[in-house]
Image (tube, rainbow, N blue to C red; front, side, top):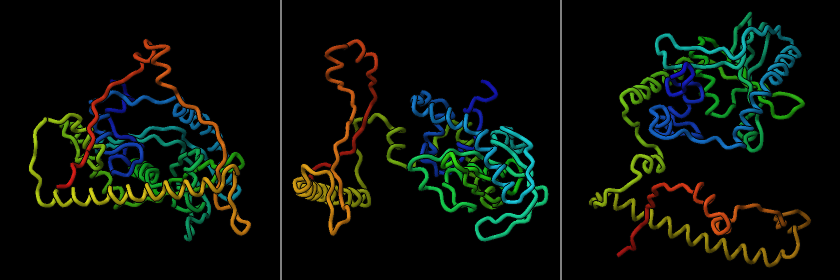
Length: 320
């Protein structure tokens, strides 16, 4: 194992998954990765381009953040870049801080004024694009996506510092400044949760599932046996059956409404009411792979890239 083998430690981006707050992985999925019980998830070319772009933009974001802080009247000293930290008491906890500054001056975070005197702070550079912009709140606040706030708090815990500045590049004209402030109770709770998770890794004991996909990961194959439902589970089956029926009814209603509106709009592109646009139906190109034609023209290539995985589907039997 190399020093940076991610299966040997928990980094900042892992902590949100441990806490059950990550949009990218559940605790069980992270555990499978740390215990190497599944093949590494492939990174698409688009994902790799995003990672590469973020790495290339870090110096640019850092310099823009420093300039903005100086424009705010603070004295700024850049002291570290991409330094890695390891927790002395729990060496499986690690963090890499994008850059570190020493600040002196007055700043406002949220509605509170903070006076800093050579305050050594953590800093993180983020490139925020697309729909992700909506997850960020007001500038100069602590309103950052929860999965990032968890990462930043983890870094504060390892470095012992009080402030993490987040420089979010939302356009090439400027960066928005956000903050995460140290909370010792949160840090302690996170450390305890991480310690329990790492014990699961070391003992190869799977953490409890938190999603249906987790259950499918734990039990990809059935044993062919039957199990008698409790009254509680039978009631849940009945509730699920009723919900599925309501969804089906709503989908049928949606189909009727879509047809009526589409028939009225066609062949136009826009629908207005009292002069205001209320719907659009514009032509757009869609590219897709014709898998049937590929199998017919190049069966050897299709077979090379065909992957078979077990799949379990929860289906409800007809009510009697």
